[in-house]
Image 1 (tube, each protein chain N blue to C red):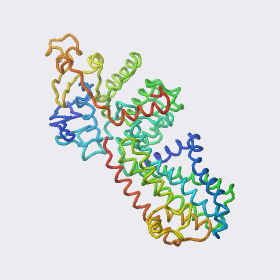
Image 2 (image 1 turned 120 degrees about the vertical axis):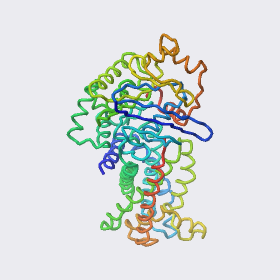
Image 3 (image 1 turned 45 degrees about the vertical axis):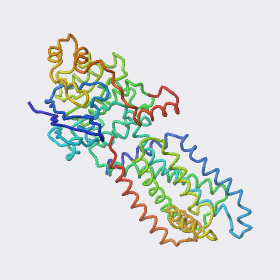
Image 4 (image 1 turned 90 degrees about the horizontal axis):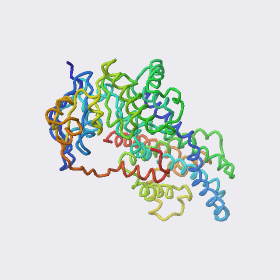
Length: 268
Length: 248
């Protein structure tokens, strides 16, 4: 099988701190791959390096056969991403957000309009496509982001905690779409999540990362068998321990607090 | 090219959709126009300076452009914190195109604000001497807007959050405005201050704009145009460079 993502001996240091410590793994084409780990384990840092927005300290990455540090354009064209936090322009309509994405990814006008209509339908937002995104709920925004990530027909769909803060209905809805897509079009899905039941249900392959290192890699069934656990959550705890991780609030979190204080609560 | 266009269009859409912002950012220039313009008018005339509103108005228009252009650059911080920046940074277009689109959009918005303030100045009694030079006034307004959108982009790219924002406004933008000859002429100033004015890029923008409206240039049209054009080109380059270094 064709390997869509190949990571070899990947390292990222922030000064003394080693966020990603000699990580290697690969993701075959068409697979739904869950990248699991506690807070601060190095998941998001790895995703940032895969998606060209952060340079690794050392190691090699191939995304769809291209190197994210040198062939950025090809890599960026290969994947669609849903980030951990929202990345829509609230002051634009859903349609305008999609259209802007299509232009940036060089999707020709006619195809763009046709695919936007098809995709907003696909995620159940067709009737609200002319509304400003700031009037959307969290779940609607997420669905729109998934639709947007698919607009340019990426070979890889990258999802960083796509279902955080969503109710079970919306979560099921989104995963239903993604699984269907993976089956119909052979899109490779790379995702992170804290919901182990979710990973167990949708992923055919998972890797568990902790303290910047891969501690286990295989199918959810393999992991459960290796740790002698009946469910993936117990297997995860067995692999990564009970200690609760501290994560320093970064500038983004502090800024969000400020934003909330300024604009009244409940916008995000 | 299409990426530049669509990102520029985004800024314009955001601008026209937020009347609160349009009106809000008119407050400061109008305050300065009314308080200084009418407050010092008779004193300025008695000292032999002529019509103070005519002198002050180009300075007030420059002020509106200065602030709006710098804000447009600093908006990068908001886009960074509230997510949209990532969407553009993972797109298969060069960072130069992204930042040029942003700066262009920001500059057009700032210029639009400048034109609104210009109309208000005319209502307040500002008289433009020569309509032939009016296109030149627009050129200067656009160059000032681009120049400071570039400077704002440098700040927006370097700062991680809004904590540094008052620092920039009070220690960089306010002094740039006050020591640009926007509200007083360089004649008769202490030598150090005069040199300060000559080192300030906005001085040449204000003088160019004032000259285009009054037909009298303190530094000369060629000097004004040359200095502002070169600095604008330079700042677009520096702004792009800092933007391209952003890592998430």
